[in-house]
Amino acid sequence: MKVAFATTNGVSVDEHFGRAGMFAIYDLRGDGYSFLEMRKFADGIDEAITGTKGSGQLHDDRVESKVDRLADCKIVYLTEIGGPSAARLVKKGMMPIRVKEIVSIEESLRSLLDTIRKSPPPWLRKALTNEQ
Image (cartoon, one colour):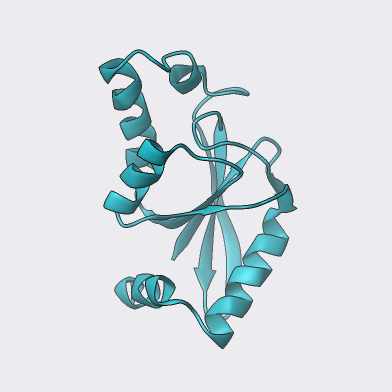
């Protein structure tokens, strides 16, 4: 199962979904995880999203494009996400996970793996089942 992390540095979950210029993509399996790639949307802040906020359809189209480029990921970790963007992720079968404070990607992966091994919530069990 692929998991995306909104990041500015490739090490921490430290960015808002719309602002994120890049997402670290990992493959999570029952026995561990591995880094796959860095998906880059912009250098620094994603101005294609932030610069069109309030521009109606143009903004919506750019957010939808970002969601589409991440659609192979079942989980997206981030610091913040707006309601409409969260709804777009969920509609594509993706689960946004908001972290309360900046946390390392490695720590997030270890915690997720621990949750999978112990007692995954129903949405996570479904995502794991659909991956097999």
